[in-house]
Amino acid sequence: MTHQTPIALTIAGSDSGGGAGIQADLKTFSALGVYGASVITALTAQNTREVRAIHDVPAAFIADQLNTVFDDLAVSAIKIGMLSRPESIQTIATILRERALTNIVLDPVMVAKSGDKLLVEEAVDALRSELLPLATLITPNLPEAAVLLDRDEAVSMDAMRKQAQLLLQLGPRAVLIKGGHLSDSSSVDSADLLLDQQQELWLPAKRIATRNTHGTGCTLSSAIAAGLARGLQIRTAVEEAKTYITEAIQAADRLQVGSGHGPTHHFHRWW
Image (cartoon, rainbow, N blue to C red; front, side, top):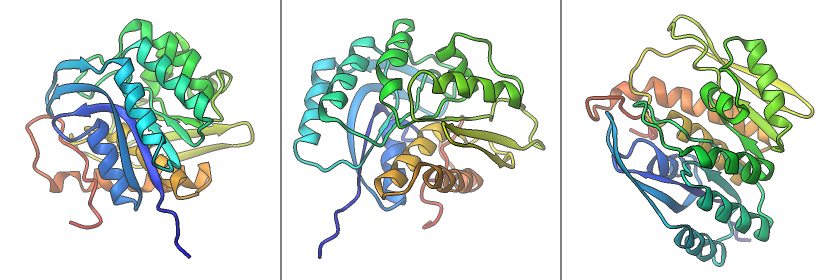
């Protein structure tokens, strides 16, 4: 009996520096034993220091990529990352609804590690109304959660919980709100919160002293999608992905890439 190869699709922007976006997602899928396909929503001129330019892919061509992939590949899970234009968001949401796809992990990428903004204002409303209700899981950090809710950024674990509850009301099945921005102290634990209608799970982790954290959000969300593609339940997929990204950050200084915020080490278990 032949087993179906697990396939995950990333819908995101391309990072020419290789540390985030499509490139990070495909590396993560491969590292976790999942075949990766991709739909590119934007091209960036990017390195470890800056995003120098962004070239958006027309919505019609995004649709062509999506339909071509879905017409042939049995996609088991989808990770959605950088979407900078409302028309792109609406196009993707329409096709996902038409195809009745599940296991959708939405990482609402809004700001690069360098501080460069990646999302136009008009796209926030479209993201909130079109894609959040389709998501199996959303993975915002604290600044992204604040933008989605049009509120001040959470500054405590209690505020994180309240914002996760509000995000859950917008339609996703589950919310993973990342608490890494709560404190800059390397001696303080960084806690993420997984919340759905049945459970609340805090996922603490020791902060790791490294500046090489480019693409951590992309990597975490794609690792969760890889777990879902392999048939894991949301909680188990999140827990395994959290372990993977923690190890990748711990190993990041083994790489010498660029002079800014370098990438995590996606293949830390192999080389």
